[in-house]
Length: 434
View 1 (tube, helix red, strand yellow):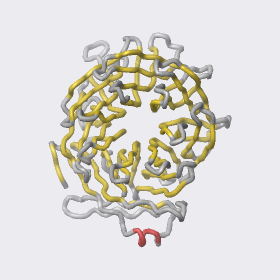
View 2 (spheres, rainbow, N blue to C red):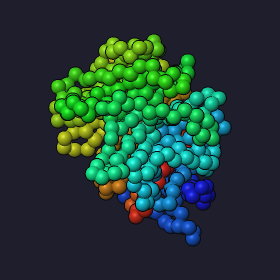
View 3 (cartoon, rainbow, N blue to C red):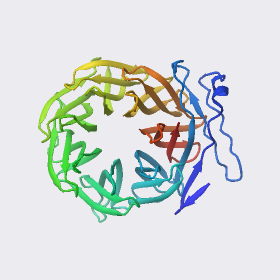
View 4 (cartoon, rainbow, N blue to C red):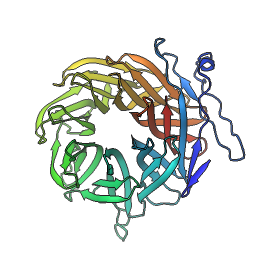
């Protein structure tokens, strides 16, 4: 166990021998039993291989798994990047025991997931913050996007929230703030979900925008461009095709023609939504995906494919029944080329997708099990979406979720999210596979 500025890092036990793991019977109770070990009660965490993984490809081993806790608070990681030194920088939020509001959280680790430093922002009664995404800034540090909400401290409006601001933070490699800006027109609530750094040093941020004055107007997709210093160059909002005007972006990428492609959800019942703009944010086309009338669809993330198209990852959920992980491949014009659903025993959802060096994709998500606990899920596919291997990470009396995944410099994978071992609190979680 390692401590740093009040934070606890727990090193989980390495994955059991792969050959031995293959012999285990896969049942609903297949999770390895948790056992408290040592005086500190450190709990080992075991990886479970999916029974449906294809025989021609082997899932990687768990190299290490780390938890991050601060004074028994509730921590979560929503995005990560690999640092130039081989370590990792993760962003999310923390809810401290006795604290009035959530605080935004940055944690930097070494290459083994051991914490080197952390920073928190906000968390007072009048100031709630969270981070949603992070991008590396070469030779400088990190660009991070999140949300900040102010709360009134004085009667008679004590505790009432003002509109949420989009929040942009640039730090150096030690986490020291270099640029700190907020964006809002005063009558809007803005929730950023995704940041992209362009080759010229500019940034774009995508998310959702809610007009709080026009009460009959719902969320719309939101895209903003800033220069390297965070100065706003332009912002645009976009409506989906449905009559309820409930639309938002969860992720975006820059296209090969220097435009932007955003993925998310629109209308009710929700449909997967994909929208393309030019370099100035002018809409060029949009598409919706999902046709079943008693089913919802949403895209959580997207990645560019080697042929100039895009692969989108999300979730499809029937009104009655279990959800499936959902993959859709489109060409450069948004026309669907293939579609796959991936099912595990329980509610399956995808949160993050990354293109791998072999042209395939790696996806992270969560499986809510029938026993009411949950597993983290990692799926590797080839370029056509065919599953090469799947891995679940969980145990009895444990909740585990994976929110983000990247391919690492050594060809492995790092995934981040949150874990909770009963009856404890949620901890930030990073997992390395190789």
